[in-house]
Length: 337
Image (cartoon, rainbow, N blue to C red; front, side, top):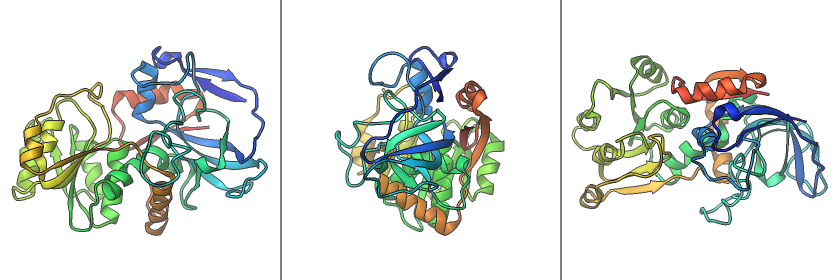
């Protein structure tokens, strides 16, 4: 079986093609022909050694895949050969609240990864995908789509008429923009690129803020909301953004922390802004299979097409990683297998 290995801490250049033996199916396992793999910032963190991995040595990277069921093992009831499926980020978090037990197993950080011709996985770690999505689009559901869903509607609890602030135009932020618009939620989007902001406008963004031209962008957000602030911020962990995000949130509002793009997850914050404003901050650890299924239902009902920035052939996987690392993308970077 053709696959890729990457050595955590050795960088993108350590990504290399390998041949692995085909794995026999055990009870309740499914063999999936992988058609597309969507990359996340987490994959860059694995490459650079800033994300914890299980075991030592090279790993098969990637957590987000879509493909076709090609074989089912004994006891499988959820899928049949030919079904179109996508991976769940946490194969053992089916529903309910997050817990250490449910999130102990992940894809792409040791053990199983998805950047390969095929994947053998327990049937509980897969979800059916909307019929109108291509495999490249469906692969973006797993992490970015579910993270956006969780941040907006589960942890964030936003509803029609609320206002959310979306930082940047990466995969989660663009997914959140599309979902918020479908739910009647007002959106404010920031970016350092006017070109990207115009693309966000075309997707339905209500207010655009160029943070390179407006370094105190939280003031622009407050002006756009009549001084009240937004109901929710999707905080991507950019350099120096958290304090401004807290300032931009209305009293009783929430900051949903979805990443650490500023070089890590360590940051100093002033708690007074949270306490005095009765504001809340919540960490978003992707989500459960039930959330992914809820997301897929809305995507199918509203005919939402996820934004795919670019698709790279499997033989150009390293270039796909480099494009993601450049920050020039709008939406998701995907590898076609």
